Image (cartoon, rainbow, N blue to C red; front, side, top):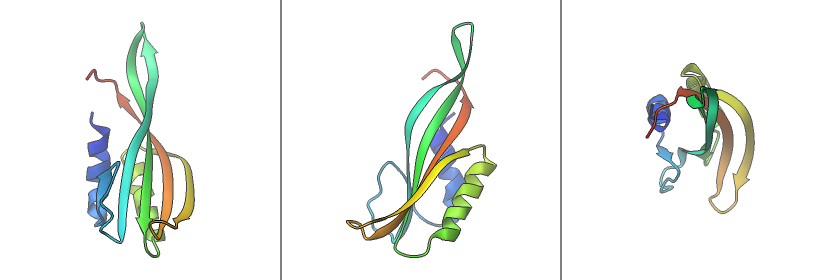
Length: 112
């Protein structure tokens, strides 16, 4: 399963650019995400059966982005993501508000 694709397809209807890892920063509001860790979640007979994927999802905006953040969390939860952590900051270099979400997702293990 391509979890990156799940995120892209889940967040696309929100109407703001969604990018994996980096975005060119032309839009006033956008979402960027990265998988920062993955690990076995369930093993049997020395084989990995399920994998836990850890993602950071960042929502950047020049203005009020609270509804967008609520929608991001709601949509990701609906497809199986679990929220672990979140924080909010203002990026002085980019002049944007930033909501950082850490979420995880469990998928059936597939060899690459």
